[in-house]
Amino acid sequence: MTVLMSAPTTRRRARPARAAGKQSRRSSLAVSRAMLWPALATSIVLTQIPFVVTIFYSLQNWNLLRPGARGFAGLDNYVTVLRDGSFLSSLGATVAVTGSAVVLSTLLGMLFAVLLDRNFLGRGVARTLMITPFLVMPAAAALVWKWSILDATTGMANWALGLVGLPPVAWNTDVPIVTIILVLTWQYTPFAMLILLAGLQAQNKDVLEAAAVDGAGPLRTFGWITLPHLRQYVEIAVLLASIMLLQVFDPIAIMTRGTGGTKTLSYLLYERAFVGLEVGEAAAYGVMTVLVTIVVATVALRTLFKVFSTEGLGR
Image 1: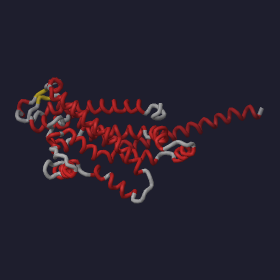
Image 2: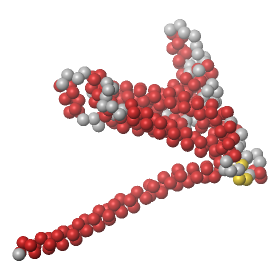
Image 3: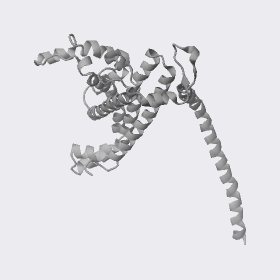
Image 4: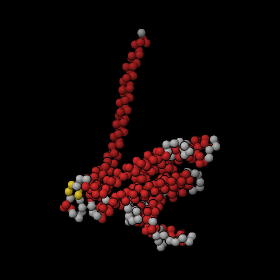
């Protein structure tokens, strides 16, 4: 009889304990959410409110040369953007420049990350020097590349070509899109390298040692073990680099001024806003650029997911 009476009593005592535990977890969760509110509010103020204002401007008929004629235009600016041939050509230039620079930066970043993950004398100095291009201001980097390296008469690139008997190249005018891709690859390779190097350092060394004991060579180990491990790091590198490169403006404005197939959406937006003084149309281009960024990021992530969905390169 005593045992039968003690079981309900124990359950009644356990219920308040569980209720107290749930209340404690709710209080802890509420505190954690409250601590995130300042960062969330700051993010909304700095990103979402300007985007909403841009959408509002894109619905206005507003030319700075005719301030008195400002009025509501509805979707007319978007119709103008889609009908204008400049939008499609700039979209193609944006995809070509961004895609080429992202792919090259990721491949070179992975190569340098693998090399810098090894132990050798002066590794810390080498890592510091490798990240230097990403720390240079884009405008300063564009000026150095334009006048010191790629100048048709005094540039170091043509000087090196002359040493092997090749004719000089007017890089900024003959191959402007190659010039922009080259500069962007040079500047964003350290960014991809840092992310991939972090992924390599987070890899379990015991797994690599076990693969070496089983007789797996460096290439097989990299393709079947290291590369699948780096999938999420490659996705992050590609996603962030794509978002940043879609907004690149300084090298194009300084080195090519949008000529030779380098007039990207960001430079076209600048022309409409500060040359044509069409604020509403420029805002519409800005909204379309954001939509293109979302589409490119989504396609890049899905493509990468398909590439890395297998266990290794051999499957």
